[in-house]
Every structure is written in C-alpha cells, then in structure tokens.
Length: 365
Image 1 (cartoon, rainbow, N blue to C red):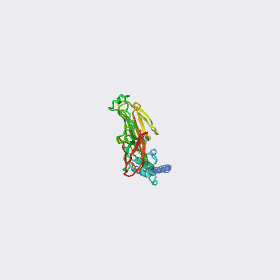
Image 2: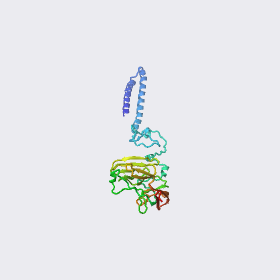
Image 3: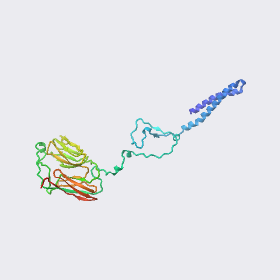
Image 4: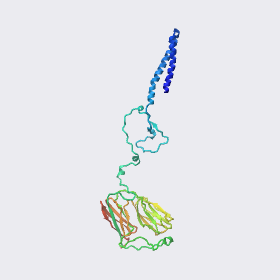
C-alpha cells in the first residue's frame, strides 16, 4: 500500500509538469523552444518511473500473499546429529528455532533416499552377536532358565569313628554362658544315628558352561549364643550376604580367604542387632570365619559361580536347586573336617539322579 501511495505522489508531480506544458503549447513562441528541450526529458523520466512502480506492485502483493509456515522448525547445524552420535534429549542452551522459507523459494534438489537413524534404544543398548549367544541371565531368585526337569539329590555319610566333641568353655565372657541352658560343644562331626553327616557343602565342581548373575537374595550369617549360625553355608560369587550380631556382647568378624581377589577382613560388631554386608569376587571352596574375642567361634562359607549347591541337613541329605541344564558334571562334597569326595554324573531331559557320598574321618582305621 505504501508503494501505491508513493506512485500516486510521483504521478501528481508529473501532472504538475504536464499542465505547464499544455499552456506552453498554446502560447509557444520561437523563444520557448529551448525550454522544450528541458521539459520533454523530465516528462519521459516521470512516465518511466510511473511504469516501473505500477509493474513492481503486483510482485510485492504476490510475495506478501504467500501462505505462512506455522510452527515448522529446523534444528541449527550445531544440533544436527550424525548417524554415529548418540541422541541428546536435553535442550541445548542458547538454541533458537528457525522458520523454514516457502518451498517455492528454495532451490529444487533431487530427492535422496532417507538415511536410517538408529532409535534411542538401539544407541543406548547396542546388541552384538556375542551378547546374543551368551546364556540367559539368572533371575533374582537364582534359578537358571532351563527347560529341563532335572533333579539331583542324595546323602552324605561318614565312615570311621569320629573323635568326641569338645565342650566349649565360655567363662571368658559370662554373657555368652548365660545364653545357654546346656553345655555347648564343638560341631566337628555331628553324625546322626544312621551315619548321616550334616554341614557338608555339595556343589557342581565342573561341567557348567553358562554364566549366572548373583541373586538379589542375601543369606544371613548370624552370631547367636556366641556361635556362628549356620556353621556351613554357601553363596555365589559377588552375591551379597549379611553378617549379624544377635548377642548382647561384642563380636569381631574375621574372614580369612586365600583365593584370587577375595580379601581378608576383620571388623568389630559391638552392638546387638548390628548388620554388615559383604561379598566375595572369586570362587573358593571354603572361606573360614572366626571371632578373635571368642576363640571357639568358627564358620565356613563356600563360594561358587553358579546357584547349583546345597548344604546337607541334620541327617546328611541334600537336594540341588532345580533347572540344571542337561550335561555331564562333576559333583563335589566338602566338609570342614572330613575332607572331600567327587562323583561324575550325566543327566538329560527329566532325569532324577540320586548321588550319594561317603567321607572318612581322617586317620581313622
């Protein structure tokens, strides 16, 4: 509109020039011919300006009438992500939104095939062929994801005559003695009437090829009545377990491992109900625990890389956890005093295997 008003103003000026010219033609004389030489070019310039302005006005109107692009944004070049860069979900400080120009003003380009852009999940969690071939991880409970219905159970018996258990003198800490109504003895060979041997750690020693994650369940090694309970227990590599003082007296927990990166530790538990959390990074047949304050206190913890282990009950029986994959395995039964024994088995499908062990008292006839 401003351009139209400008054109009108120029026309008015030119009319002011044309009007004197009409008078000049009516009253012209030979003396006025020089003036004509000046006026005619001025008139031609005015007519050219008017022609130019009126021909440029439609282009302005046409440009201003183009549809506007609402909300079409394009990330700045600094925010463009290449195919190998991870996605960035955070807004870049100082970034601004650019409006896309009208499509008719953009240069025409040949259509290109769209590039494949990896999703956020694919970038953050890449999958490899090696990872896909690994065994499925174990759930929190510690069971292996196997379709086989294999069960392995048995009994451990003791051969020979064990030495008598020794009565424990707790007079060094009167509070310990007050926690028992009957005499307390060692637990070296607690054989039942049929020869069944408790406190034997039974586990698969070799033959397993998979990897198992440590379960979330945390076993408890308690100190109650100034004794470690249980006397023998098992955990998986890197599985956290709790150590508790349930007594109204000071205990110190002294573990003496010797395999790999399993570190010795020794800490005090002065408060009743105190709980500490520990784990071992390497497999080890038995890690011995003791209490330096009460020298009769001992416990033994077996550390293995899989969940297929058990500790024999009071009658010497055991049952390994279910879902063992088919295969050929070496089983080992280990006792803190009676030593160890191994058996080889092969299981398939829905096998029910009974595996018995016999351990002997050292130096027994």
